[in-house]
Length: 234
Image (cartoon, rainbow, N blue to C red):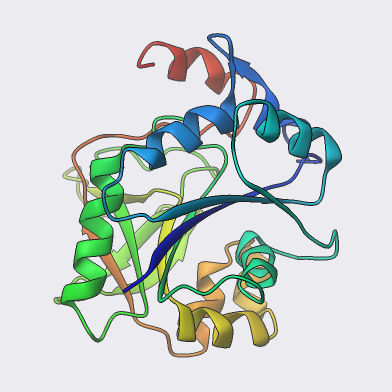
């Protein structure tokens, strides 16, 4: 089974323009992501998919492989779909460019679960937290078999008492290639548009998303102030 990783990267983020190439301890953020993925034993190739020449130049400067895509894509997964028209893979790992703390062992764990669970169309990680955080923190509710029922920026589930435990989603997705093609060819659902969460499109079309608990609390960089939080751990 061929496993590749693709990092979709766009320059014009509304909250943080230029985020993929913002320097963290002397390296552009996307290089931290690339180096973390390189430590995964399960991944054969890493491709950075972008529509921006500035990102392309930075990626080439540290020896990464870059694929220039259309600027019309509505999500990172759609951008990956363009890459897969030219490169074959059975399993595709989608790592967001704002995950500089990504660890190769986490990717290996997710890929292993995908190979083991034939019913899973997507595998993605979560960490436990007593706080739901703000709207940038995505929460998950799951069924008894650890398949996602829903993802939301709202604090779900609602708790009547003080004992609270939230499943906090982390932005790594492992796809079966066949399902990814179905996902990309499907229109955005009203839920996806409402929450601005592309994984809701997968649920809407009947996809099975297996969620896996990880211990390392990956800090995503949503805003420039998150850089200082990440630097402590790098």
